Image (cartoon, rainbow, N blue to C red):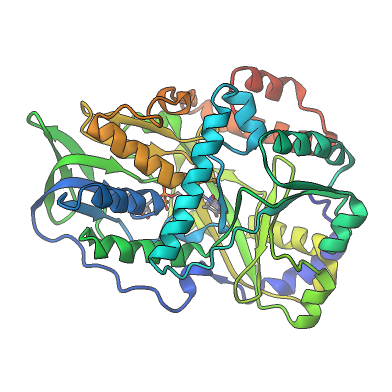
Length: 473
Ligand SMILES: Cc1cc2nc3c(=O)[nH]c(=O)nc-3n(C[C@H](O)[C@H](O)[C@H](O)COP(=O)(O)OP(=O)(O)OC[C@H]3O[C@@H](n4cnc5c(N)ncnc54)[C@H](O)[C@@H]3O)c2cc1C
């Protein structure tokens, strides 16, 4: 949580005057040419719907498992259009929402979840190196920062939880925290050196696309899937604007976008998350804030910021103001929300007043697919012919590969360590329908914000905790 001060208004307004509504990552040179849309009727062994990390990893892993499989990936827009090309670029081994969340919800499985998550991240790093993907992946860890006295009090517990599970962490008091990154708002922090790092999400998406094409995956961009239906004993008809595909198996990797399977509307809440990117900082500006280790930074509150240096010397600053629109509404017009971007800018200059005068070049928002327990819902439909993995709740840049592998297990009818996990077998609690959903989400947000200020969880959040609902990130 950042305390906002009206004095920064004269700094905030000019910082946003020339800011373009564009995603910084996909605005870089080097984007591959889009593959042509699907225009003619076809058949495939496996059709994957959605060209983000989940869809791309599913395609690559399916081909690595069986190169003779005919795999077709259909993407409504372009590869990296969704969360996969517009996220903060934090990459984490966690398959839960961090250690405290995992311990609270899956205490018996926590050891396995951590091991599988760490293996997954290592395999991603190995793949990126082996395929020569230039995604600026560095496993530098991150620092979680306490901005209130009650957040400082929680740091030793957080440290102990991390140590218990073998993470490399260091508790930083106010002086040590401010010596590392210079902000007057910092009261302490936890430097976590293991378990993750940073990458360039668009370049990772583009690299995975190239790896999929090299393996013979057929990709069609500009091809929204309109509907699906089971046909006969063993196939699914996938309808797109120009042509139909008859598929033996289908994977749904569409994140928080309008789901093609009705049941997912109960389990997944589309939430818009907002991001700003600054112009490149000068050497003097960088030395005014320190940050030599170049790790990712987050604050420890419920409504938290995530921020990082970009490979070309800017700051990406996002999070805090997560917005749900009534009726699960999603629409590109919702990505431009001036109040959220101004709030983010104000909080940025509260954190780094020494950067007054710096301008933001890019602003955008993206869809996060939230479930009631903050981890994905993975399962099958249509008698095992279709698998889905959605609901990463803003922590899916690495977990999406785990989702992909689990879907392939499920489609093959294999019982594996992954498919037997409770986190996979048990579905998250459904959200109530509208008109109840919107006020309940708003009420829960207000309780989370209040906890950030007071440090008290309160009756509503404690009740949700007891029910195993994971609104504590
Ligand atoms: C602003 C923001 C910041 C984030 N920061 C982080 C972070 O720092 N670290 C982290 O781990 N996670 C982060 N996330 C979450 C992370 O980006 C996602 O969990 C992850 O990218 C999910 O990948 P995906 O493939 O499931 O979904 P997406 O990347 O969203 O891909 C889904 C694709 O499906 C396509 N699609 C949808 N409907 C159809 C249809 N009917 N037919 C065909 N195609 C369709 C979409 O166009 C889209 O390209 C962030 C997300 C956002 C939005």
